[in-house]
Length: 118
Image 1: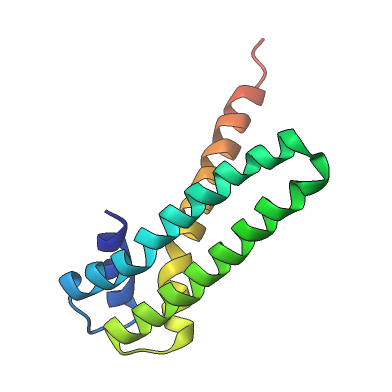
Image 2: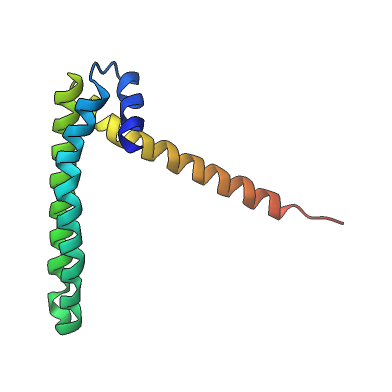
């Protein structure tokens, strides 16, 4: 599902890639990322042994996430033949749009509950 959404956004940025190629290359990034994230999550048990070791899983998660972002940008650049800005836009635009929609829905729901009735 995510790969299809990325393909639609990539087409907005004039991407010329194929869905199968993009999906395969993204699976090469997100497969190991999922495994490494799981290991990092298990390492959070270190906090139970020694609270001073709390920063190690957090730092590891940050490094893994940055590496996955860099690799996903390179994959989209390769798959669609466009620049870094368009690849970052392809990755970030769906989340930005979804976040704006959620904020808008929260505002509308809050505004609806603030109306006073006599």
